[in-house]
Length: 143
Ligand code: HEC
Image (cartoon, rainbow, N blue to C red; front, side):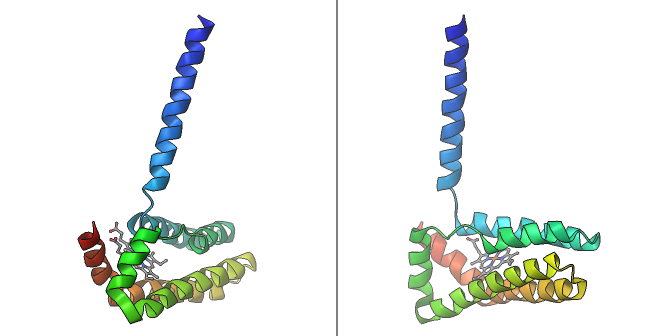
């Protein structure tokens, strides 16, 4: 009887491990972006109720977003060529602003939080305006 439970538990464990492995391998530019979107919405929600702790936590998640898988980086680099530096600069800009946002939130500086959030969103939209469609096409062709 006990061994049957044990086998069952092991089976569940194995299934869970496979699920986690699949989740990890499924990281893509798109899933990273969906994460950024969720974090941005969380920041907006938190700002509306002066929850600076939650602002700081979501800002950290933006700074620490997962890396773009190398095969996708290659496809993007092949498409953007000399503009790859500008693409990376947008990423760095958003990264740096998310760190400033965290700092401002930790200091409870509401005006700096608001201004930095707006600048960060401008960084998201700037990259989208310049590169989103091109990158989507390049990734679709590479698949
Ligand atoms: C360096 C450029 C760059 C920056 C910076 C950037 N994005 Fe994106 N984003 C992209 C690209 C490219 C896509 C298209 C990805 C795809 O569909 O494969 C995208 C797609 C998205 C999508 C659509 C995902 C979907 O389900 O189709 C969302 C939402 C998004 N980004 C949110 C954000 C947010 C929020 C930020 C800022 C915190 C941000 N992005 C910053 C390049 C960028």
